[in-house]
Length: 76
Ligand SMILES: [Zn+2]
Image 1 (cartoon, rainbow, N blue to C red):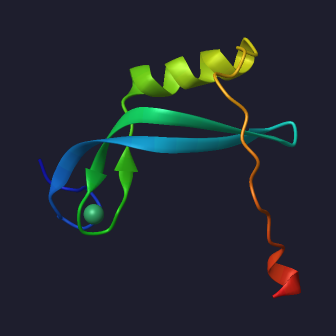
Image 2: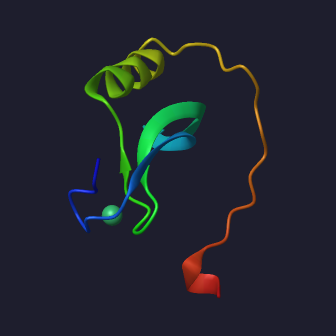
């Protein structure tokens, strides 16, 4: 399978997916995706995206909570 964007090689990989809803950041780990080894574009299946959306909408309890450093681009 080749990348739709650049024609690079696509490999199956587990990725981290981040999404912000209502000002709240969510990180979903170990998400299966097809990743382009050339441009880095990630392709998620509709079923995977649906599963993530459902978990967010249902306000599923997180498996863990992490602290994340934040840098404002304006300050650098
Ligand atoms: Zn690509």
